[in-house]
Amino acid sequence: MSKNKPTTKRILLKLSGEALMGQADYGISAEVVERLAAEIKALIESGVQVALVVGGGNIFRGVGLAGRGMDRVTGDQMGMLATVINALGLQDAIEHAGMTARVMSAIRINQVCEDYIRRRAIRHLEKGRVVIFAAGTGNPFFTTDSAASLRAVEINADLMLKATKVDGIYSADPMRDSSAKRYTHLTYDEVIDQRLSVMDTTAIVLCRDNGMPLRVFDINRAGDLARIVAGDDVGTLVDNDTTRSNG
Image 1 (tube, rainbow, N blue to C red):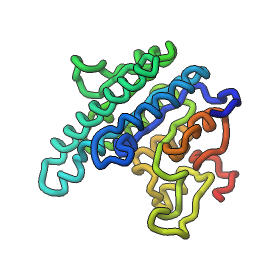
Image 2: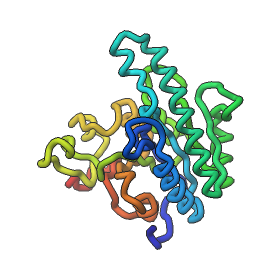
Image 3: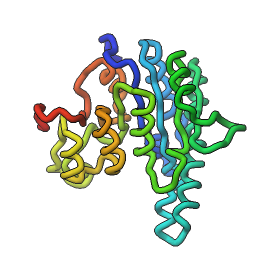
């Protein structure tokens, strides 16, 4: 972990469901969530307020089944429930690490978690609790990336972090194209115009229109979270600054 003092007060971290699988083909890896919990604990102890949005692709993908005939709304609702399962798993790991966590769902499921209420979420953060936003936006046809952008804006986060399996944004898939170029900085419009596979366009536009800086980084590199909040130039930064190089 960086020894520098954090320069960021409040972050929203977007985790895909796939990021929780580790090397498995399905479900939640205990090793992965324990490592994430340890890194989040270090941030909390340094004074950073942490909110999470988690996807559900490790359990269920509504879009996939919709393409094979399932009603899209039903599929998306099933996907929302998958994110609640992941959120509860993260909550358990975070609490085992000695922190307090709250799962807040965009759909009503009161016996297992709280309803999402913006002011209550901010209050939890101010008290040093980790807040995990589940069930996306609560609406079909919206991705959890869009939910992350929305929640980041709503809670007045200083920075939104998108956790991926590679160390930033590339011109092409670096797993398939060895000549793919990694960017250190991009504007939102460059991401949209070049159709870079970062997040869906709705999520990027939400960030752009509300001036929410986005940093894309490799979740599997231990310590990068701490380095980011300390101000280090890790991964790829996306914002409205047109004066910086996108090298």
